[in-house]
Image (cartoon, rainbow, N blue to C red; front, side, top):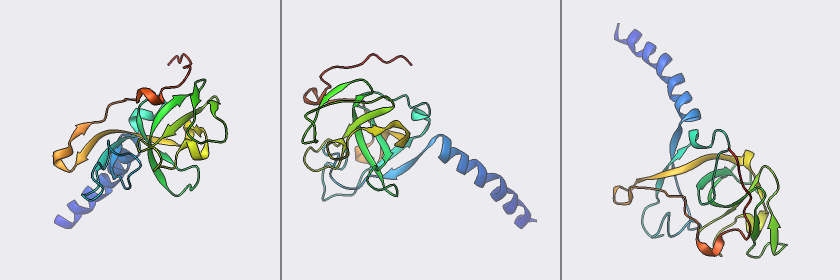
Length: 168
């Protein structure tokens, strides 16, 4: 009798869990130093874990300053976490890209790690298709002493030279 109940719970629970992970979000470990000091501020301590909200990007509704998870343009098997610096139509001053200034094409964004010089980002691979964006990092959930909401902040030194008006 208990076995039947267990099987019923699994049969109902697994699809609900998968739907939640695919639609709402999940917790992921952030590795590396590319987003310091916001994420993993002390490279000697444990890695930060963040809640990645799939729901927040379901309509590709992202803004400058958002910390996002995306499929790496260099390696489709790898997910990376970066900050959106510019959106389609914006003109951005690059940091070592092949052109000093780039106008972000339609359906793309410019992403950078916060730890300039220690990150592979749009300054390496150029504008990124919004189709590669899979989640927005909204909270640091582990370790407990780092619990906090991640704000959409953009350093003044990295603001686009011109910004396009976006209607959502």
